[in-house]
Length: 430
Image (cartoon, rainbow, N blue to C red; front, side, top):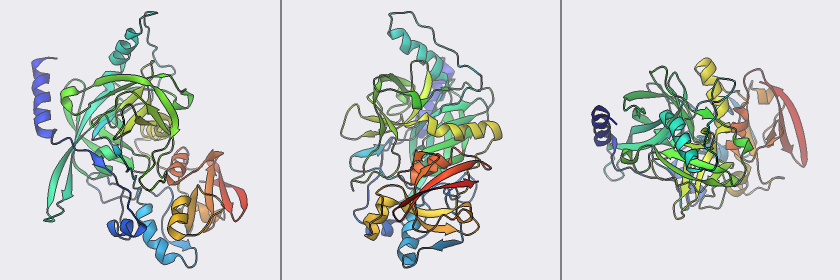
């Protein structure tokens, strides 16, 4: 590394390193505590820089609505917080600090293969590092937080990792890395040491994914793999910036320890993401948003969380969850989700909070149907529980959004609902 890059790196670290803070998410001890922390109508999702706050749940809802009788008061408040998109991790689980890594789909027909000398396993890691590291970036952020004692605002620095998914400057990372969109300053450090400002284009807290962009062309990009093809025991390689830029682009290795994992909160629920890739590749604060790779140097996941009190227990979001978003940005420069037009909450949360038994213990409970929406047009009703989209199981709000994000306006889809004791397939056109 030449002296100029060392100087840039030093300046970058001194300005942005901060305390390298962790983000801890605690589950409220009761619904009343949760509602007190988040008053009615509060939006938890982020905003694009320079714009007014944007509700990230348009895929599901809009106003006006039709509501189940007798539950307006309770659900009106509860929905205001549940549908804000909060991703709650507690009970010894934390999301890693703010460094982003983004993976980009290779627009060519075939990804370049890596050639290694047979019998020399160490060559695999060197070859992956050589191909993948140029697409890995460091991210620093500044967010404003209110002092609990004096009430004044103060700046909080953050760190993360990201991966370039399009040569025109599109970067994939975690939503929590960019403060769920609430950043006041966002900078990206490229592989060559150049530091550039970035803007938030899109984020979804319930999926913990975000797309940011720098104004630069011809950037090195990552190749995307297929996370649906993963098997337990396959080699995994993580690249990121653990504990800060002193250890930028650190490579660690492990295996796929498990698939389709969920991370329970202190309340024992499993709300949020339920299809994590579990790996024992070392993931530390600063790796958040970075790529989890296979031996072909393809991104198979985005490193997101680890167990606070356990070693070798890291979790990554499958890259296939992000592919539809990445592809839309690559093709159109924006992401336009389909609009279903329902408001509600996880079936499990509804039963626990309202004390009413449902015919299923999973899915998305529909409390309100928006007037003029696709849901109203095709007779989805308040009280229905959405349990599937196109044959894929919907266990909660996050999985419903994930499945809807695979669709584009004009697509047909089968929405599976439970109404009373009956399971019904409804064909809709978005």
